[in-house]
Image 1 (cartoon, rainbow, N blue to C red):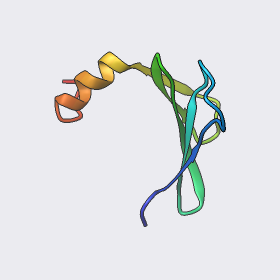
Image 2: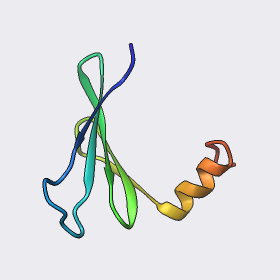
Image 3: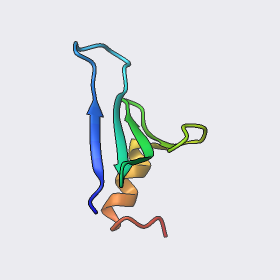
Length: 69
């Protein structure tokens, strides 16, 4: 089954406010991606663990085909 992606955004333009994407598979939340001006953050399904990556590192990974090797 395809992943279900839900986006929650501010109703008005607000500086320094993240845009959040809730990611679900088979009805279960697998995580949340938060996008901000400074970085991308991935929160695990239970929301207890967060992983952050800078835009510069994200660009480097993606332009190398998704690998950090």
